[in-house]
Image (spheres, rainbow over the protein chains, first blue to last red):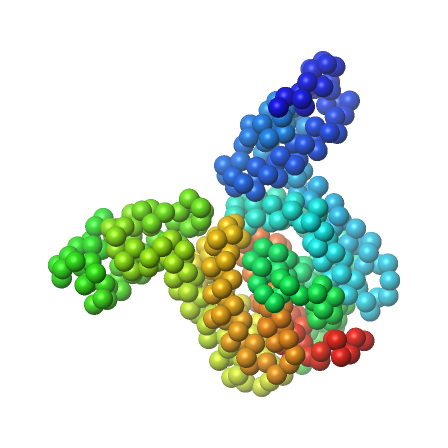
Length: 214
Length: 214
């Protein structure tokens, strides 16, 4: 279980090996961190347990990532990589179909089991623990919500982006975590067709404070 | 810490006392169950721990509620009591304002700290544990979604009710659990005004499979 350290050791101390890059060990550490957070919960997860799962020395985990919070942040960033194209994707097509594109993009990520499992682990940790929620919140705000909001030419763009995210995150929660039926079994295209108009309105619709009867 | 058992014992065995009703002990057990599930997680929560928290004998917890799953179901039912008026509330006003009424009703429950804390404990347990998710799912489906769906005169009423629930549950998650800003600080009436049209369309709007351009 120590193959991850074996390679750095051949080249000297972990610090030097890390500076030279050891992507396989980095990836193993992030995958082990996700499992550790998902299985033990954020409070009980430890750098030692993550290192054991990755087959590396705890010093290497500290070296690459720092504290437990920072390992968690790195695991979130990796899990969110597929989602970080959302702001570009909003611009790649007709303005009046942004709601539909965002819903299809989001469900496409969650329908892919390779992407879904890391996201489930992260969401479970963030819901179960305040410290994990803070890390999750800061990353999603800065990397995703702020960049989507920057594309919206409406008042309160961040609030609207967060409410659109709430619709999609709520679907992920009820469909993939709680598995409510019929939602868990519904054709993704049917779900997209039903929610797209509401998401579109959140992203681009009139300001309700200007037009309370809208 | 055994005052809960003391009262039944005055009247005989726990079984007799339970049949006669012991609402104070029942309530203490449900409150202790919420704390136990929230603090220890569903897997590690135990009847013994719940009994200790409530100051009663474990036999009384078994007697009132049965298994751990059944205590959890009872705790969910108690936490959801305020929400169970949702189906009646949908009918109590103009049809074209159902989305707004549902959003205001839902946020009103979550804005009340007395209601929010039990709901947070339940949601955290259901997200973190498959067995808790199953209990949550069955109760929400039968007690809430099915009854809201029965009020909707549209195709796929359950799927639509679940998607409207997804919008509102997603708001609860991002506002009260993850505490994303600006959503966590937003005026509830502003949130209601922004999401009501989308919720209304989910509940009563045209079938997108009939009119894909809608």
